[in-house]
Every structure is written in C-alpha cells, then in structure tokens.
Amino acid sequence: MNYFIGKSQAWLETELDKCQADYAAGKTTVSVSAGDATTGKQVSMSLERRMQQILKALHILDPATYPADSVIPQRQTKAAFN
Image 1 (spheres, helix red, strand yellow):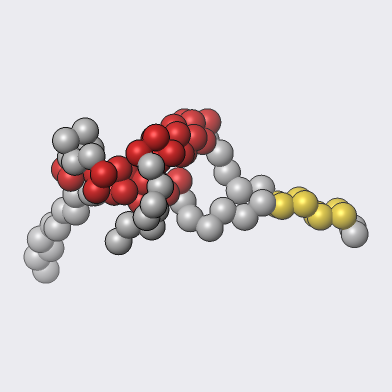
Image 2: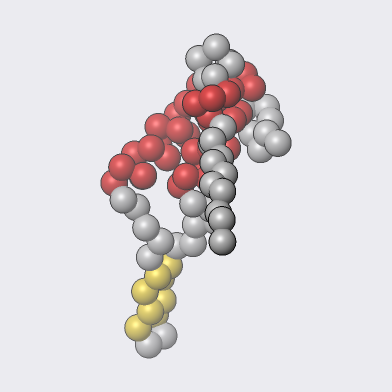
C-alpha cells in the first residue's frame, strides 16, 4: 500500500533525507512531566517503518532508482528442529 499518493518524488526524497538524519542522530521519543507542567512528543511509527513506507512510494514512482530488492525488507525463515 502506498501511503503517500499524490506526493512528488522530490517531496518523498526530502522526507527520506529527514528520516535518515533522525535515524543517524539516534532520535528518540521524549516525554517529561513535573507537577502541573508537562511536555512531550509522540511518534506514531518507528523510523525504520517510516523509511520503508517512503522507499516503497519512491519505488512505485521510480523503480529503476529504487528497485524492489533494496526497498522491501527481505524476510528470512529458519528451520527449527526439536
């Protein structure tokens, strides 16, 4: 599913840059409260998930630059024998 319908490739690439900068900086969710004063920020999804969704939208717009094998996470299955 493409969550970014109608967004341009330039917009998506800008958002990807922001997401990668946040990821590289080790950004975290912070919430602080003291008595009656509170402040906080809530992130609705992980940076990894946000990057995956942006990359998927970019793949839809430009599959040559953003091929599926570099966009869609590869899942591995391991056999477990008891």
